[in-house]
Length: 174
Figure 1 (cartoon, rainbow, N blue to C red):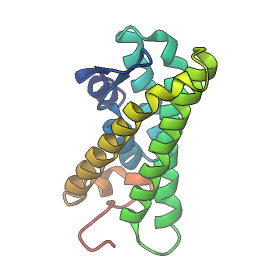
Figure 2: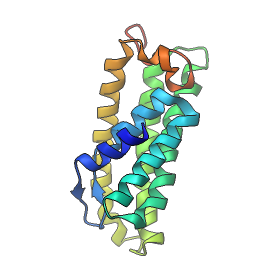
Figure 3: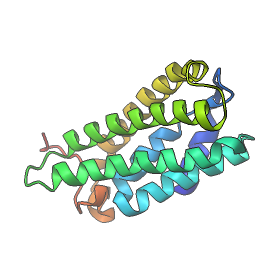
Figure 4: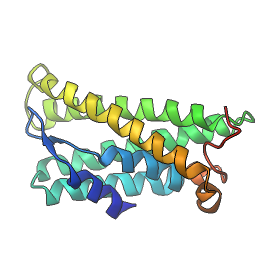
């Protein structure tokens, strides 16, 4: 998953106004969180994305990316665990809730990172918010599509998807 995250991040790179780039890496970050759970999902998402920043020539973003993408994966995994583990088998709701929280963390995280660490300033760093928001929507939709397709194959049961030990979401899930 580290390699897949890195490759998807590098496969399509659209430069953003704030010296970064939009990419498809969020699909792998969120999918990895579903597949690997709350312990390994954040490791794969954070390391794969940070490695892509280094390879792509954006090493200044790598520390922020490591933390932001790991937090995104943790949000998805923990949301799945909390909602699915509550006795109500609602993994779709858990994934959607987690993906929305994750992408919100990503947009806010990069805005603050660009503003405070890179030194853009709070208002100028807002220029990156629309691009990150688009990346977030595409990443959430793409990962949800992957999860939906693979949930019917039983991959989740084999891998312990979402840290809850069953396929997420399935045909009978709400």
